[in-house]
Image (tube, rainbow, N blue to C red; front, side, top):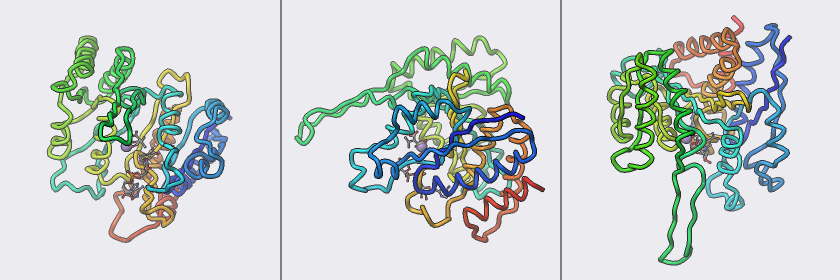
Length: 349
Ligand code: NAD
Ligand code: IPM
Ligand code: MN
């Protein structure tokens, strides 16, 4: 039987709560399937930092890199915790994993499932995927500040954009659009960010000439936020830079029924490194420990993981179970574990 080595990083806040449910669903869908997931837990995040002072050691990174895939909950400690003042877990752990494992495609699908409690009165069919660049842009940490503590403080964050980095993610987005409804929207801010935006536009135009079947469109990011609310069904594949993609995908989560449903994959399409699957949301310190978190985003991230590993039947079963669960939702409150159990039941049915 096939063995898949899975690194599991529950993380902080609601991370462990939602990952527990995602793992239950993974176990249920793979039971008796001939595929065995061998899971290695990694204790990483604010809790680990407070215990040991480590964020992500070289040994952790090497050990994680030995796996076939990674499932992550969320990381980030309680805001304002003075002991975390110098930690920056997000950069030292999450972004470090994305960069070191070359997760250049941050894949964030948004679909409005029937029954999902979205905020739009007349949403239409919403089914699009944001292909967010994952290794460049303002996220690289190329910045600095001087004269801190004086009125003359200066702070810079440089957005790093390479032709190589843009082209590879743009190619992925075109190929995805070719397999979907054949519509690709580049989102940037070319009217202001003329250098980076201009390069994104030129690369999209060049790759477009190889994909005559794909209809290409461009929106400035501010206008894109309008259409995500007023006419989200116009989108099929959105390709955009790291920071714009971060912002748009929280909005996309909100319009499709809440951030508790939004899944993502940090993909290394070349397969040189393990890809990492995680909900779009964070550690939600405001509800952590209360079993109020919706584990659906983590569970749908398992579906993306299964798909990535070529286990398409298992992925489809998880997605269908989630769809049915959402379709049956009413106002009755359910705990994190109750939602997970209900989805497990549907997977087993
Ligand atoms: P957040 O996504 O954690 O929370 C935003 C709001 O959404 C909160 O009201 C929260 O209760 C709600 N929410 C989030 N997930 C939910 C779920 N599954 N079910 C129901 N409600 C949910 O964003 P934030 O508050 O900006 O960030 C909190 C911490 O998480 C910060 O430290 C941030 O850096 C970190 N973060 C980590 C990740 C990650 O690990 N991938 C992603 C985003 C934010
Ligand atoms: C996300 C998160 C991260 C990001 C943070 C926690 C670094 O918001 O995964 O969307 O900005 O990418
Ligand atoms: Mn985000």
